[in-house]
Length: 79
Image (cartoon, rainbow, N blue to C red; front, side):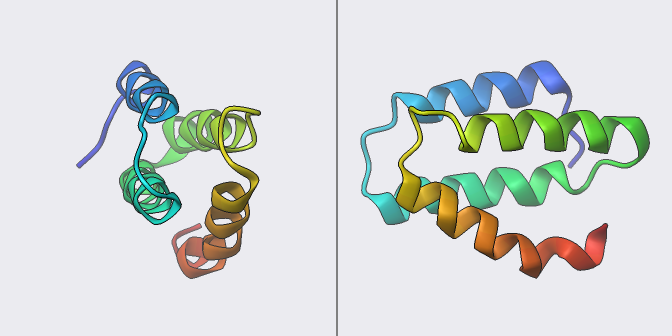
């Protein structure tokens, strides 16, 4: 499923207000990353920039950011 930048931005913003456990938050971020990686070309680059900016934002727990960045290796075969 290919998504557009504005849709991703909205989904990432909704995660800022999500009050689930760290595991639930990390799972939702992982799901979004998987969707982002279905894009290609310029869209992929734009989406990845937006995603990385969102997970390193001060509103995202450091625990979650580290988990997602470590999991990046799992998805690196796509790139």
